[in-house]
Image (cartoon, rainbow, N blue to C red; front, side, top):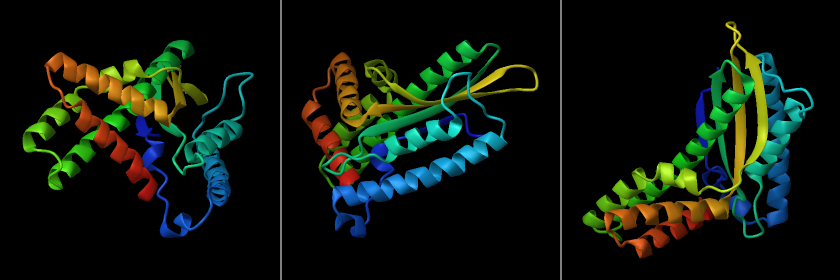
Length: 222
């Protein structure tokens, strides 16, 4: 069974190699599109074998996953990923209830991916002596307690894949995959962590901006 909780930041999924760095954005897009289609077909085959299906009137699993992977690998003209992706599964007696719970979990997982990456960068800046131990401790604590606020700061998400299967006891298992604009995701993180800082009386907004800017730069150079 696919893991119930899965969230991947597209900002950190696209590891551009030295070879990619020598290519144009259009060339990279073409290679990513080929990879997306291949990965989508492979996953669709596996999911169908596991009993997943779509609701009447919805796009087939193959088409949904093709769109999901295209968005996951999509990049802007500057070479940055356009979307952050999140996924989750939930189980319930009724389809609609399970779907709503899965969507909420997917949003939380997406927010958790942002939160985890910011925390890792804080630790890296300490190693490079760009943050004092006290500043790092404060930022780390604030970031780790900001997941709920990041989730609340997310605006309209895009549901790119939605499927279900029926368990032996009759319950519905619903799997959803969502996408969110990367730039808006960074803003949601900034706003959430700033709110948390303000509540705690901290004033490290400048440091926070530097960390998030570095996060974007690192996604281009990895």
